[in-house]
Length: 73
Image (cartoon, rainbow, N blue to C red; front, side):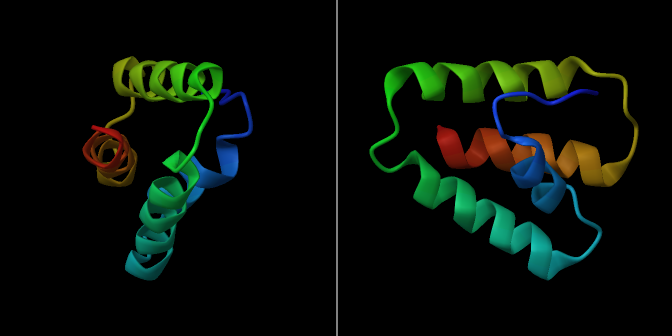
């Protein structure tokens, strides 16, 4: 999947097979949501929606999507 809007690095962290990297990704996402402008937030939501409908059966990908939803809602 081609991730856009600068979310590539964040998704890579969230989908890492190393717990420390996943935790850093979740922390980065939480900090990034503080004071986020509405357009960027909308792009982030669309990003995770697209990631969730993508065909990918790895647990890391699914974990990243679920973590993203958990943090932003």
